[in-house]
Amino acid sequence: MKYSIITEGMGCPHCIKRVTKAMEGVGAEIHRVELNDISVSTDKAPEVLRAAIEALGFKVKSVTAEPAGRA
Image: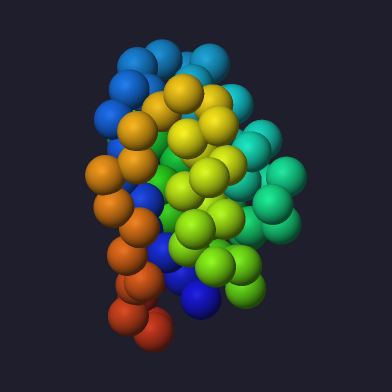
C-alpha cells in the first residue's frame, strides 16, 4: 500500500534524513520525503508509520492511503 503522510515540525534537511531513516527502519519503500510531506509504500499498518515518525518528536497530521496507480 502506498501512503501519503503529512507532518508538522520538520524544518531542516536533518529532519528529512531522520524521518527517511525511520521509514526505512520499519521497512517502508521511500518515494518522497520533503518537509512535512512524505510518500512511502509498505505492507505495515499506518499506525506503524505514525509511531515511527512521532517517536522522533514530529506531529503526524494525517496518514492517507494513495489510490492505486498514482505516481
